Length: 201
Image (cartoon, rainbow, N blue to C red; front, side, top):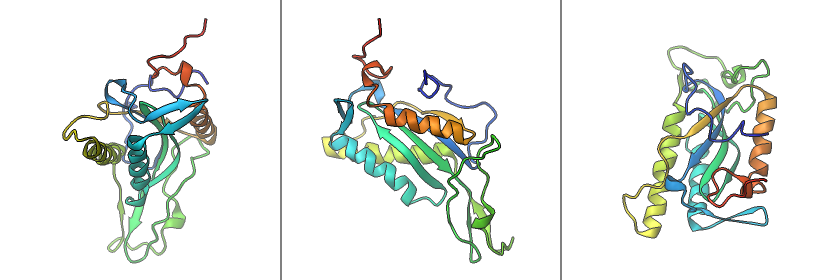
């Protein structure tokens, strides 16, 4: 797969509206590439107590937001790779908040699903959206607080500024991103984020 899904991609796609429904491959890095979340043993990620906090808060991202559906993710020693689906959530007395989880087959990010809306009344129903940046910022705040509370380092930074993303536009790209996540621990020795990585001769 090469570097197609690594953090080397541009931080933001110029002109793209990150509030609209879409599917994203994300990379969030620990400040200073510190090996904070655990270790790789025989190609398997073993999370420590800090990694478990990250895992818990990432799962909560979906639980507390109607607009978010989590796909595959992996917590690595000093970064996280994840696929996140951001959807429009229509709220009101005539709607159901069921997330859309597919990627648009026509090469575009998925649009809000019509099946999520029943008898839409413009005066009583509205779309509640949030930006991808707001979702990630909230996750970072919660996980940072949990880690700092545990290690007694109140106010310390845990995450590198911002994050890296790639917009996944079809099922093929989604499949490649899932494969990359699954194989990431196996490829740790050659990972760009591994400060002790082995460079192939």
